[in-house]
Length: 177
Image (cartoon, rainbow, N blue to C red; front, side, top):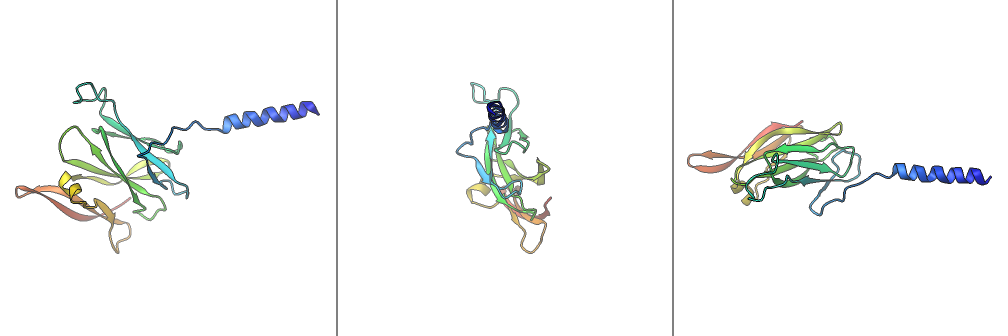
């Protein structure tokens, strides 16, 4: 009987050891959302590239990585970025999952593309093509994207353009994946 107890206890400890997943601590600036639609929150955050001593270039590629607290969700790499701001955009396409937007940071310039992603089969997919934004748009607190009223499957994007010697914000309605 003692041998059976010892065996069961050993199996229990082996099971506990195998079932515990290594997790990365969630940073304070991580963004919370239900990105996979399972009703449980996930967190996403940016892992920045290493910047050289001059502060003017990256060591290696200038690529950020978007990491998720759910290890089943693959990280997303975005080139030509040294940081950025992630926003949970809610469920823009009525698929039960939150989409997120990211405004990448760069060394110079107020111009930056805005990216919107959705999760499909544990991989991040572009939800709408990226669009240009300028810091004027962000300083004016203009929402870059939201559902198009009365048009299921469509969103309104707000983007910046240089027109007639000034930078203006325009909008258009586009389909979302």
